[in-house]
Image (cartoon, rainbow, N blue to C red):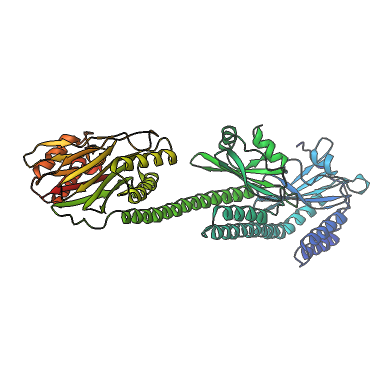
Length: 573
């Protein structure tokens, strides 16, 4: 700012009149009048006493970087509301052409108002009547004016600062209450759709906007999850995830939609007349975007508003993740209950107690690798002193295999005794081939024991050949039969027949026994099964079965099962 000394003129002294003006000024500034009225009246007193054409009072803004117009009299139309130039360093600075305050406000003199040595305001005056300069007498009066005004102005500025802080605190309290309400609402045991609705509604209520939309990434890309106030312009085909994710993950926080990178996301939001994009990012990965429309008041979103919007978005993301985990947990619990029911049903299909057969003992066990399995064993008392024995293994494990196993169980129960072993197995094969997928098949060993003649007639349909071990340790396998059930529509099956002597042990097992795998990835194998049966020679059927299962458990160790395990043991006495 260009400065020049002030010329003093000989205007005489009106000491008493100016003292009265100072008293009036002090009374006015200390009155209970409204702030604007008091300052306007005080400025009128000063300009009247000095016969100045105009006057203006500028005060320091809270950040100290600007000087705002607080009161004025007689300024030119359209005069700026800020000082427009640095405040004076001296008590008085005369202005002329080229000075901003002179050009913008028509002022010729600036008087600095200090409080405790700190500048707090600037009093600006226009030219005096007749073009008279401001001389020593006027400077003396202005020193008294600035001294009288300093304390009231400082108090007024402090009150205004307190009001501003109070407004900020009130706004913060409102934000905290809003966030607390939203947190409480989101903490409820809501479904994901309810959470989306709460978030969108809360945003609209807090910012007083007429439209808001929540977009989330799904299997097909970024899709509209929930919206209010939108018509069809915010919908459309899913936005490919790659470009949309890159656009959102690169954002520092909430941004104007127009600041987004050019692409489908920006076009979609602009078509929907949404103006603020709040990225939903977790662990550096974008999960969606909360898009907000214009405020009804037209007021722009401040930094504080953006911070609140980001907090709401994070709350939404956390609540949605919690809801997703709850849904997964509920599904898991429901599946566990269903599997438990299925296991109970499957267990009920197995025989409850060993059959009483003269000259023979029977024992069996089946243990699914998962909750339910595809292994099956059964014994069925037939007429004429015969007993049907069945062991089967459905390809696969778990629920699908258990369902097919139940079908095989029902079919065997219906056909056993109604046809000879070979025709029975052929009918089973045709049924399974016609009613199961190509990848589904069943291995089955079906035998009928005539306990009076000790003859065992059997058909092996692709199953692990049962082991027959004589008391002297001689071992053989029961192999006659044909392919697994369900593979070939017209398959035929051969019938095998053996006579069972006293002391013979026949063990019908599934591949969960022979292929049981050790931690070092070795299979138990046929030879070890035979050795277990030889060691159990002379033992009861239950003891032989227990020894066989114990051998498998010891072999697999902590690794646990890899397949269902089923064994049926027949011991001749």
